[in-house]
Image (tube, rainbow, N blue to C red; front, top):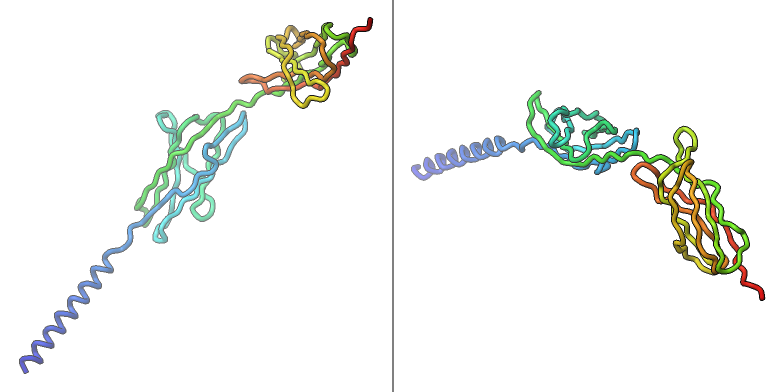
Length: 240
């Protein structure tokens, strides 16, 4: 009889321990999470007066009710964080233009549950502002004369122009002249010139072998590069 009583007590105690263990396991719920998984493009490149849209992909645990994303430049106190536009499935977009700060930015994602912030994640990305360069062209390029004796001079002329609501001459820029001999596939530098009033330039070289010439402008921080049409010169030997 005593053994039976002891067995009943042991069973009750064991059952109580099982119930207690189950309650502890149920109390250990998983913490809410949020994670900025992808920022595209990175860096965000803005060209000229255009606009570039950046997309942010955020993952959050299933218990989260809402996610908000904001971005702000690092080291710039005068600019407030701007909130991202929410798309589908915790995906966000933010437009950038030339008025935005260049450099490092921070993206901050906040997960909400019952109106309270339950998780936060941050990621750093870059914004680059590129000034749009004006289009240029080399017009009226000529290598003269068309037929020249070996050793004599070949003269080059042309105009460097920029498209500023119409083509206008560019002054004070360096233009290089290149030469490709008959039967050759490579171009060699032969002369340089600085553009004058109206974008005009002149240069010269000695004639040694028939071939093709062209003028090239490399461009600068504000102007695109340009290349002229080619012009052929025939070089003939002296006759006795």
